[in-house]
Length: 478
Ligand code: NAD
Image (cartoon, rainbow, N blue to C red):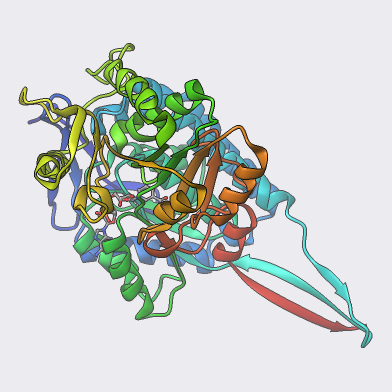
C-alpha cells in the first residue's frame, strides 16, 4: 500500500491529514484497483477549513485586494494549470476512466473558467443613476463572504473550477469538497493555488463524504453561500441544510435532456451530435441527450446510422489514444446503470445496440433502446450513463409536449434546417439551455442552470456576480 498516491486536505495553504488520521481508498475504475488514498474529513476537519476561510475573509488581503491584483493572481493559477495540464488530465483519467483527450479538453475549459471570471470581475462596470430628486445612486458588488462549494465526480476538475473561479474572483474565500470518488485533480488544484501565491485560506480543499464533511460545510453558519452540483436528491438536502442559516444556494442538479431531430435536419450533423450528447464521458453528463425524439418519417434511417455510429466508438483503456469510450466511474455507478439496462426489456424496450460488457469490467457499452413506455423508469429517470431512449414523433406540438413532460429541465437540443422552427421550438422548450444543431457549446457570459428538479438559480457572467456578491445600493445627496 506504500506506493499509493495520497491526497490530503488543503487547509490554510498546508496539505494535511485528517485530525483523526482517517483515509479512504481511491479507485481506478478501468483497472478496478485502488491507486491512491485521500484524507477522510470528519465534521472537525470541515470546521477547520471553515475557520481558515472565515479568517482569510475577515482579516486577510483577498477581499480587500484590488481587482487587477486579484485577476493577476488567478491568471497565475491558470498559467500553472496550463503548464501542468497533462498531470491534471492524467488524474481525472485515472480517477474516473475519462478518455485522456477528453480530460485534456476539460482541463482547457477549467483554465478558461479561471481566466474568464478573473477578467469578468476585473472589467465589470457598475450602474450609476442620477435621480430626479437630486440624489445620485449606484450599485456596489462586494464579496459575499465564505463560499462552500460541493462538486460531483463526472467532470472532477471542470465542475469544481466552475464554482471556485467566480467565487474567488469576486473576492470570496472558498472551501471546495470534491466528490469522494474523485478527489485527485481538485487536490492538485489546491496545491497549485498555494504555488501561485494565494494567501492562506482563500482556497481550501476538504476531501471526504457528503453526509459527514459535505453536510458539515453546508450547515455551518459561518458559510455565506453554498454552491452545489450533484443529484437532485442531494440538492434538496443541501438546500434544507443551508436554509438553517439562510445561506443562499445555487443548485446545479440532474437532467434528462430531450434531443429532437426534425425531418429536415442535416442527418450527418444530427447523428454526430446525438452520439456526442449521450456517449461522451460514457453518458455521465448532466446535460446528456438521454431522451431522443426522431420524426417518424426519418426514424428508421436515423436509427440505422445512429446505431452504426454508436457501435463504431472505440471502447478501451482511457490512456489509449484511440479510445473514445471507457468504463463507468465506479462500481456503485456501474451497478446502477446496469439495473436500468437490465430492466428495459421487461418494460417493453427493444435494445437496438449495447448492453452490459459482461467481461468483468465496469463497462456498459453505448446502449440505444426504443419502444419503452413513457412511464418506464429508464425513460423517465436520470440514468447518468450511456443509455439513450428513443421515440418517434409526428408533429411539432407533440414533440414539444414530450420534451417538456419531465420533472427535469436542464437542457434540450433540436436539429432542423428551418430557422423559424428553430426559434419557435427553442422558445417553447422548458430548459435552462437549448442547443440548436449543436451540443455542449457554452459562452460563460450566458446563464447556466436548470428548471424544476434540475436546479435553483443560474450561474455565468453577471448571474455569477449576483450570486457570489452582496449587491448594495448607495444613495448620495449631491
Ligand atoms: P451526488 O449528489 O451523489 O454527490 C455530489 C456531491 O455532493 C458529492 O461531493 C457528495 O459527496 C456530496 N454530498 C452528498 N451528500 C451530501 C450532503 N448530504 N450534504 C452535502 N454534500 C453532499 O451526485 P454525484 O453522483 O456525485 O453526481 C451526479 C449527479 O450530478 C447527476 O445527477 C448529475 O446530473 C448531476 N450533475 C449536474 C450538473 C449540472 O450542472 N446541473 C453537472 C454535473 C453533474
